[in-house]
Length: 264
Image 1 (tube, helix red, strand yellow):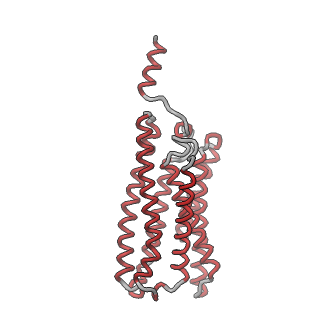
Image 2: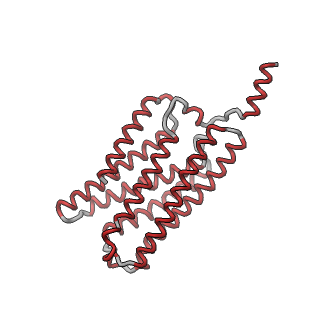
Image 3: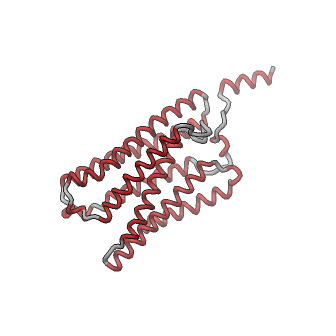
């Protein structure tokens, strides 16, 4: 968590610098990305402090754990909602989400509650004394909600890419196609890790595999940061921000017709 805190600090400083430099052209989405980076930094710092006190005193207080869980839940929930609204085309192909906003919020609340309960149980309760079905029961709600998120993400992303292609908005289309490659890679890696994690929890006693359990948490933090880094790269504040804002670009045929009219 110390390393993650350093990475988030560097990314946050870089993002703030870019936002200040291009503040007159900032998109709302870029402000939200900055908020997600800040939540990631807060989570890393909170958990680092918790484990540092644990190493020093040999015991963990409930309050630091709860604060860490709340920070983690906020980061995971907000980041998933951010990815979802990006896939829905908010601020790029549509100015508002309309009636869809209520469903997005409902899914976010459900995921936040399930994630918080699972993380609190994982950090406070004695999981080594729980049976395999009970351990799986704690993971399955989060897994199901993650599947719903990914299903909605790719469905919305496909629709947005189709809309951009039909309108011949090439700059936005290229951006969203690159974004789809990032999401696909993260989905495949997530599915592989979840399968491994479910198999490990169901088959091996935790007392025998405790030394490798950190790999599960480390993987999710590393994957999350990699996806966030890719999103920051794709939507980084530049002087060309307005070409990704909610406005229709002229398609190639329209540009050709306009040129012919000018020549005429």
